[in-house]
Image (cartoon, rainbow, N blue to C red; front, side, top):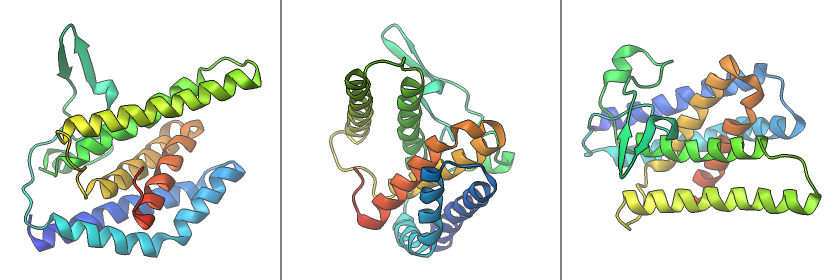
Length: 209
């Protein structure tokens, strides 16, 4: 990847981010979600600078064929083996873009984002109960999500540090999810919005936990 391609990566991520902000502006959001959307709008300039700085580190890296829409729903466990399916890429993107090579961190971000969705499904399907039980269940879901992400990253990187470019792909993926949910499942907007705000704060502060 040359300097121009690294710059184009930053522009692509910010284009997805800006598209998400537009979707949020037109959406019906809870007060909490509206506050998160306002935070993202206020921090747009700072995020653009951080994304450009990180994307510059992509210069010199090799792009490869990637899945393009990798998440837990595309992973089938069969006995002692695992199969990955549906290599069509993200359905909302143009075919030429889906066929293009990219950095593997984009697929890693897809899996990480799907852990958020898995936790959200568990929370939404949790039956009502005593406050103490609900609190324990919520804490358990959060712990499971964190443990799953930690184990996945550790296994993928063979115990090394995560890809430093991963935060910008997390932002791009969560922003894409906002546009997708706004068009298809508006009642799920809070899931990618929370993920985008979390990724943005992590990028701005350097804390990716």
